[in-house]
Image (tube, rainbow, N blue to C red; front, side):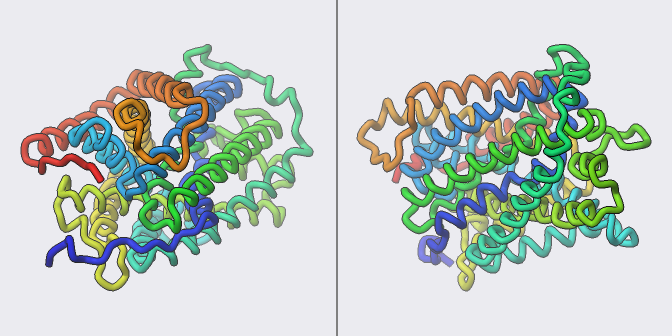
Amino acid sequence: MNPEKEPGLKRTLSPLMLWGLGVGYVISGMYFGWNLGLEKGGTLGLGLATLLIILLYTTFTFSYTELACAIPKAGGGFDYAGRALGPTWGFVAGMAQTIEFIFAPPAIAFAIGAYFNLFFPQIPILSIAITSYFLFTALNAYGVKAAAIFELTITILAVGELLLFAGITLPAFELKHLQSNPLPHGWSGFFAAIPFAIWFFLGIEGVANVAEEAINPQKTILIGFGSAILTLVILCMLTFFSSIGVNGWESIVYQADGSLSDSPLPLALKHVVGDSNLLYHLLISVGLFGLIASFNGIILAAGRSTYELGKVKAAPPFLGRVHSKFQTPANALLVNMSLGILALLTGKTAEIITISVFGALTLYLISMVSILVLRRNEPELERPFKTPFFPYFPWIALIIAAISMISMMYYNPVQAGIYFLILLGTSIIYRFFGPKLTLKP
């Protein structure tokens, strides 16, 4: 079958659906994981790291939106960097993005399994996690519109639950709890907390990967990206202050037995209403939707990233084919699922998250260089949206991403080694055996 004659991706996504995807990709980070940064940096360390990362994602999102509107293709950073810096750097950006999107879902799948296990302890966590992979891969293979409508629905529920949580806990907020033991490990804790601050927003760039399926992408992407990042910043600040302000940061990091907890919101709520209250159980139940939203959304974005690599033969060509009936990148989705399940079976969720963050930071660095180069080399390129305060926004994002990458490498040398070996190995294979691409329109 000639892939050039196969049907392409359908344009079915509205601005509201893109908002649902953008928030949904990220919202699980509000429910679990971020609180472990408190153990590293305390309230002050993680708080300052979070402010820095909010600045990163705000400046990055506006800059990335310019690229997505000017070059609305499913490959995202792969297409932008390929056009600006050449095919080798395009491949590196695409592979970094693929690593981010393949390694994030296993950690979320494990969290979904853990949540379900609270209600059905007889079912193993791993079995639930693997079943989740099959179900949501099938949903995305069936159709992007169905996946996006589902994503929008559960994202609205997850956002509502976070607002309800803030409404219950903020009346119990006390400033002294923010001031208690604010920097337990000194200023080094600020740098150690950066990866956990990134987890608050990791994945927002996935909106660009459905650009080929957006109705009127130049306008739709801007509305989707902008509204999503605004929503996420508000939710991040509400969650941070309302969780810690109840009883101090230690109470949402450590369980009763002294072990680290991945469930900061239930721990905070327990101090306000107790663990037998209906609201407490409602939070645990609906909190599952936040995990599912991110899991489903990142699976969707990962499929588009892998599909684009396959479409231009930078990866095995069968990955770049769409299903003849459903017009979705079914092959790419199935391969991503297989790799995700293999990562899940290692049981090393913290390490998996770290490798995913390395992929994201690499993508951010290369993308910001790409926008600077394209502005210089292709001033005539049609840009329906232009980054405000250019060139300051992309430069700010570039500098913060570089600081974050250096901090990550210092505090996670083993994971850094694994990540860069994957990136280097695949890049060498591509350099010598891949097609010679220009990635021009």
